[in-house]
Length: 174
Image (tube, rainbow, N blue to C red; front, side, top):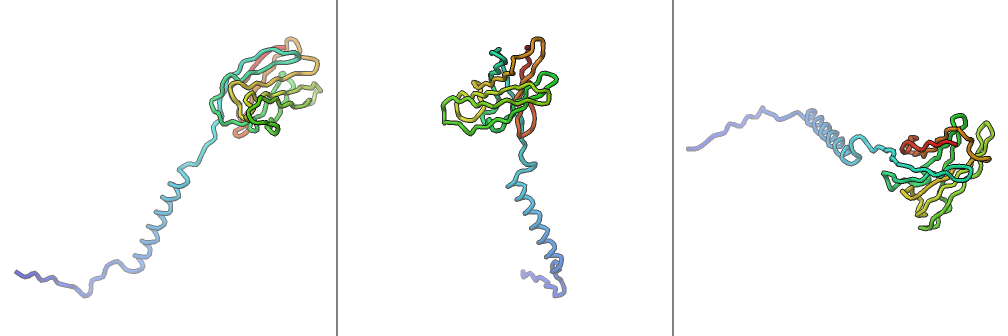
């Protein structure tokens, strides 16, 4: 038995205009999918690390020991130290210009006197000398004339990438 297929001469597929629109739409959808895959959906977010501290009194001030920090990639360049007595507020930006590769180094920051005139000093010790905040590092805040007896003080590290506190900081009395 022989099959005969009727071929219609008047039948067409999709019109050229519709075909062009479909090709452009498919290209746009593929480009959008590729863009999301390459760059990620939602971008990156910066999270503030957390830390725990201990404290010990020193002459004219307080030593704040960093007991632990949740991220090992936080550089001292990304840190500000804030110190307050409730009325006055001191803040220092730290730097790691003088690091000498694996040897403990103390970075000294000169007197800083906010309106009110009391000078405070900051010394940061990077025990590993690698430029990163670690669980063995510490900082010392001293006040000219010493801490005032009965005054409540606070000291905290600020992560400059987010502007948020790293942990709760430390409170102590003069």
